[in-house]
Length: 122
Image (cartoon, rainbow, N blue to C red; front, side, top):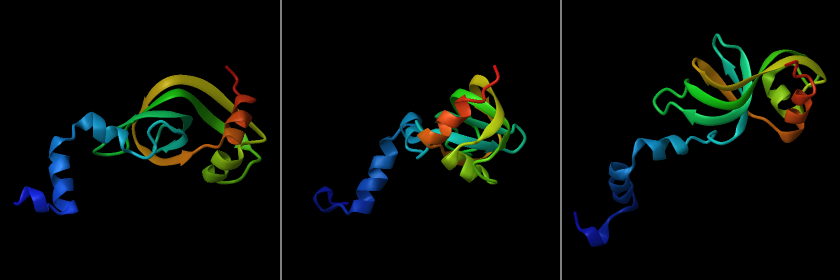
């Protein structure tokens, strides 16, 4: 391999040899974003994605989380709830939480977040 004539692909391979896991975890597109997470058996949580298991993407550490128990208005799908918010609902604060079985990440708009805050019960 001639160091002066490396291709972009070769440079990327060399770069990957030196990356550590903490850097890879930060590259997930949802890290640091406020998202609605649908879980296989833990329900629906909304909060800031702090960490994601890089191997599975199904284990997530969520900060400042709230749990969405039920809602009305804003839409039928969770995508609509993440974009439009809700008109009525029941939510509770769960704080920082480690979730397993995450099957969907949906970024939440500021407008939607403001609507959730109105219906937090505790």
